[in-house]
Amino acid sequence: MAATVNSGSRPGYGQLLRIPGALSFVLPGFAARQPFAMLTMSIVLLVQHTTGSFGKAGAVSAVAGVSMALFAPQSGKLADRFGQRAVLIPGVLAHATAAILLTVLALAHAPLWVLFVAAVPVGASVPQVGPMVRARWAAVLDRPDRGRLTQTAAAFESVTDELTFVVGPVLATALCTWVHPGAGLAAEAALTLAGGLPFAAQRATQPKPHGGHSAAIDGHARVKRTSALSVPGLRVLVVALLGIGAVFGGMQVSLTAFAEEAGQPGVNGLLYGIFAAGNMLAGIVFGAIAWKVGPQRRLLFGYGALTLMASTLWAVHSVPVFAVVGLLVGVCIAPALITGFTLVETLVPASARTEAFTWLTGAVALGQAAAVTASGQLVDTHGASAGFLVPLAGTALALVTLVALRSRLTPPSQGLTVARGVGHRVPVAVD
Image (tube, rainbow, N blue to C red; front, side):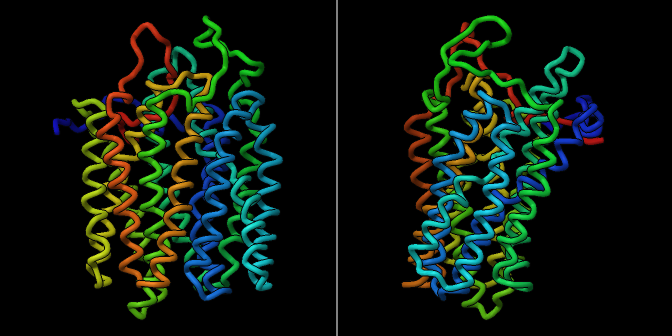
């Protein structure tokens, strides 16, 4: 695959972060992103501790994940229409309250159906900060003297997303394993408040709400507001990210069981950290390459590599070997995940930008939910190795869909106006 390494002529991250107001939403935005990455692992470890069953833990986590997947796009649509602050403040307060309530109920050994009910508002209220940060970058860079930094912002956001998936699950595992089984959800609630409220307070960088039933595109034509999911290519990307979510969910549950079977229960956080670190490092390298092939081909190639590596997980029985294999799986996720966000810019109109991003993050959550449920059942009945079959199944099915429907990933004709949002990776220089 032809590619060239960036020469360093493009604007760097330092110049991007020196834009007035940038750090005021980047820093709290990073803290407020952690709940998305911590939630699944925190619920699994808490409920497994109180019930002794990975299957029950996965099921409760799945309820939260499905709820998140269903409500995230609605949150994005409301943010596009009424503004981020109007959606985020009540959402942050509701999520922190719901997370604490679920923790208390689990520690009190409430019946399983009660935990299912409590998990619904936990997932439904997860702040969709990642898509909101991308939309803010698009807003603050929408000036002639800053337009060239849009590409740099895209790369910065993708690396930040990868870092979130390194920090979140590892932090949740450490807190639940070494501090208290409920510490993961408690910290998740605290970070929601500590990051979400300051982020919402930054009105100056908030994108202007579109409002009403129509929205202007590039200041000219007005079009009837429709759901981002009406774009065929976005539906294909949703399937792709469902498969990636299956990797995250399957790894989180099965790794915990794998570590227990190996007699080293504390090593699951380290192994997941290695897996997530491979994801982040690959994302940094991916952004330093000027690709000469289109994102459609890159997505197919990256997803094929991810499916191939996921097919090896079930056969590994050694902790050191798993560290290597897990690293390689993480490396393969980044190109597929990043390229999926790349394609959003050319496929989805600007008026539905936040909603489109939340459909993708919701797909990851839904894939996680299905995977933790399936993996938990397989682990309970057949052991950790069987749980690792779930990432293979999820990525294989998504790859078949991508190959069959690849023509839908072709951007609209040049006569149509499309979004110029922050959703893709391009070469950047790092100051």
